[in-house]
Length: 312
Image 1: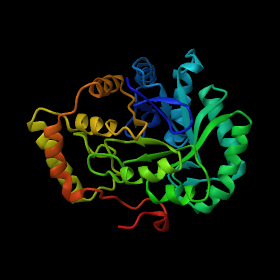
Image 2: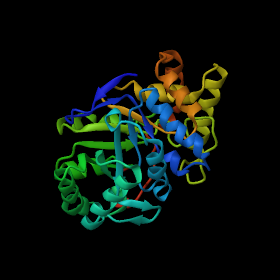
Image 3: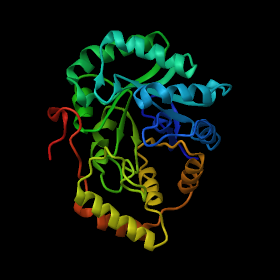
Image 4: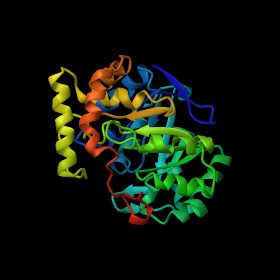
């Protein structure tokens, strides 16, 4: 497993990290023993940074992590969770909820501190609140020793500039924006570096869009986007390669992105991804697949409030 330093935090993260959203049954009903085993397998393979949120399964992800991490030395892994989003349409970024949310998360996971704490999907709210109320409340928890480093997460690229133009952050987490299909995060890297912010990239498969698996019902990809990705997948299959392998390797290859977060409640998937990470990327195939995907390069959808989103 390769490791990289997260901005100016001093934290050393594996380039492949474990995303625990699947433990909250975000994609399917999970087998509890497999879900718990997937955490242990990830740690054994060196995926020592774990990303979760109280939003995932309305707390189920954090609760299962608490079970899976029993007896695991706290110093052997890094743990990040989020706050502010608790259901599809339930958001609360108030200072009062900040303190409550962190205490609940610590209790669920059976730990006394978090390494990373992020505001979750801030594009759904008035982002001025994040700067003026939420982050100051989070800093108080950092001063109290409950949290080490702070940041924000979300879908639009615009949210990161908005917050960082007004205040400091240790880390940002972006998803679906450094993949075979969308590399908008790479365009933001010089700005993030100038602000000395650590960068976490998540979802290299773009919620299954860059895999052979069926898309979840909530996926926002248009028919043309789906068809173009299907063509790319079929082309890879004809070459004897799973497009998911190419997608994962592509997202890992950018040294400016500290880590790539992937998750599954299936230990076999975790082992497969770790194996893929250690293999060289097929450069000729990559070039051909990027050409197939060129008509939908940097396609994105609207998430949250329209005024918080990027311009077409």
